[in-house]
Length: 241
Image 1 (cartoon, rainbow, N blue to C red):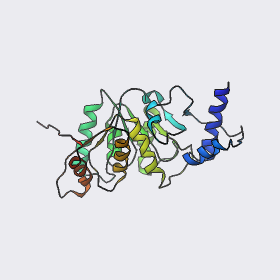
Image 2 (image 1 turned 180 degrees about the horizontal axis):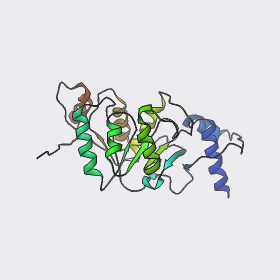
Image 3 (image 1 turned 90 degrees about the horizontal axis):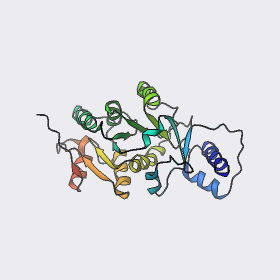
Image 4 (image 1 turned 135 degrees about the vertical axis):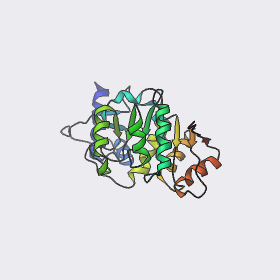
C-alpha cells in the first residue's frame, strides 16, 4: 500500500513539474505536498518492477516514463538507430537495410525525428520512440501518421507528461534515455555537431558499442559518422550483391 501511494505521488509530481528531472528531485527532497486530484497518467516509475533496469545506469535516471502503446517492448534486446533529420538518399537506403537486418532479433529505439529516426521506426518490426515532449504531442507535425501507428502498434515513451510542449533543451536530455535503453547505437548518417553525437556520447559513458556507416570525405551530412570511425567506432558495410 505504501509503495502504491509513493508511486502515485511520484507520477503526480512529474505531472506538476512537466517531467523536469531536477525539479522533481528537489520536490522529493523537500517532500513537497501535492493534490490527489491531479489525474494519473499511464506511466512506469522507478518503483515498478517493469522499470527498465538499464536506465538505472544513468547519472540521472528518469523517475517516471509516461507511455502510449505496448510497454512490454521495453523488455528484451534493444539497439538505437539515430541520425540526420535531413538525411540523404544514401543515408535512408543504409538505414532501411540495417533496420531490416535487425528486425528479427532487436527492438529498434530512436527519437521520432524526421529523417533517419523516422526511416528506422517505419522499417522496424518492433520499435520504441523516445520523445522530448508529451506522448500525446505530435512533433514534428508531419509525423502524425507515424505517431498514430506507433501509439497503436508499438511504443512511445517520454519522461514528460501528456500535453508537455516541445522545448529545445528537452531533446538533448532525452537522448540519454535512447542511449541507456540500447546495448548499441548505430549511426547511419550524422553531422559532427548533431543530436546524434550527443546520444553517442551518452552511450560511450555507459560503455555501449557504437557503429557507424562510412561516407564520402566531402559529405558534410556524414561527417559525424566518419569522425566516429576515425575514433574507433565499428564500421558497418552493406553487401548489395
